[in-house]
Length: 274
Ligand code: XBP
Ligand code: MG
Image: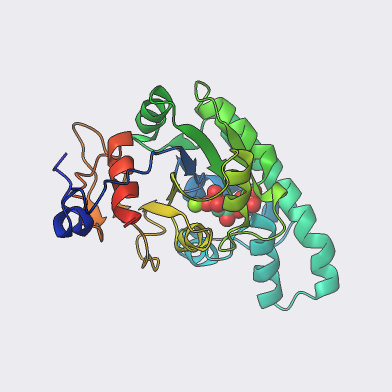
């Protein structure tokens, strides 16, 4: 990794007047959908469509339509918003949206069990590296606990999570910061210092920033065009020794090389806490 070239280090080299204040990396909070796992296009979207079919409804979300719908976080809210836009009354939606969502969640659980939803390349390597250095690991997702717990067990069985906060635990979903402030609390942290969020979307980034957290965004096909202003780092994957990801934005000039490692996150935290 290139030596630190962030403006802080460049502008005021460490010395008696500028004591080095190194914020230890204490925790990393991972988003799930689109970040740890590639779940939306062939997981959630398919489950939503099968639920519509099971209810004999004519709706089907193609890949492009679903990309637009993703700006509404939370599956039940997404269904409700879609139905409202098609003139379904509030009264009907009050019954239909939860029923459709429960059906969708059951279908998604089966897709999880069938191994349809895959972990993004490099994510496991980063998780193991962080665990090896004693950094606390947490999940902060909008998704429903029923499938989230199952997915973490099925796809990342060796990872020991210090906290898992899901859509079931919050009153407001991303871009509201509640999921991340709850995760910090569950980790026993009294504030955002020393913690980094790994997200994939504009809504997730907004939530992390609103919680005062440093945030690295790992974009995917659905979120590469999201508004990611304010991100501390944007890459298009977790990367690996033989396959570094593209560094899309490095506003703190950390010299990131496209391979997310504990060292890179530590340096990002240092540069971002300027
Ligand atoms: C993104 C979401 C989720 C899923 C659907 O979650 O908005 O709600 O799309 O899951 P994340 P549910 O914060 O992990 O990116 O149907 O369980 O809500
Ligand atoms: Mg996400």
